[in-house]
Image (cartoon, rainbow, N blue to C red; front, side, top):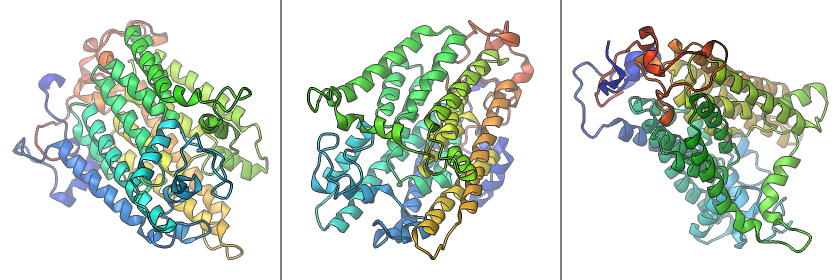
Length: 496
């Protein structure tokens, strides 16, 4: 039985039957005599695959390029090629040179008085607008999408790289991110990849024991999208159990400082003595609070089935999220072995996705790298991706149904509700599998080779300082029963 310290890379094709079957398309699993090294290193291959899949995702949007990206066109729905990017180029005043958060958007341009995105995402959008060549309004919107696609491709490569590097001995797991069909389909719908890339960088930094850098990236990610702030809850729970308060304080301090440095300059720009906080800066937060029940959410399903508009949905969602977070705390402290960092991060973000009052198709991007780090099982990943791809198609066909007048060509409400159920069940299925791995560590794919928490950084192999219930006296990772360290076939070859 080999020790985890032998340093050999884990090959999915030797431990996962679905991965092995899929590898037949490219010649089958690597043999025992496969030569290590060469240019085909795991990270290089994964990055190249990511670039190829991203390009295919751009090709999938081509039916909309010439005539589909304008309001009222059903082509963008019937061809499932919708993107917010060209719409908001004019709808948020970028075509007029307006400065986000500072210049009010004319009502003739859109339905918002200020940009409703966090500050770093607004900066991303503004940089893309500055790089977009001039021309006709329609031509500029197309070029704006292309410029953003190029910048988002960089983010996609960063995500693939960071995910492949987070678990040192399992770089090939990153191939799941690169091959994910939902990733390619949703990558250029919106600007979420920017926050996902920062979050992936934070996960990599924490896995290397760089608490300050991880916190800095979490703070920046939270300044681009709200969900990355949720990473601080798993950090708190795991550092509590391991007694690693110094590292937790370092990360939180760095996250708060980074967020403030980005946001305070705009917060200090005031409208007048009666508006101490800039209206433009606060638009993201007020819009999030005022937004009603929207597409893709559990609450839309409940509202449509009961006829109740759920005006108190913010309260319902907050209470459900809080209860779920407390449940995660109990899971962390009662588990027979300290959960891995990636497991708890996935669970808390999935909980937010399941309880939120809106689920936009691109939100799947938040979860894809986390699923790969939490449970890199090809079968489960493909089951979940199937549910998400079906939802991706369903939302556009449903919008085509509701947007073509009396023709109603598309997916009716009943079909769309079924797609919501599939999306919810697919995500819940992964949550159940991860919770089972936490409660039964011998079923955890990552730990089968004797590893403890490759993404845990200072938590990896650390003794417990505070536990509850049957977890008391569990001891250090090295003191676990030898049965918990079953070594699956590994090797150092250059192919999956």
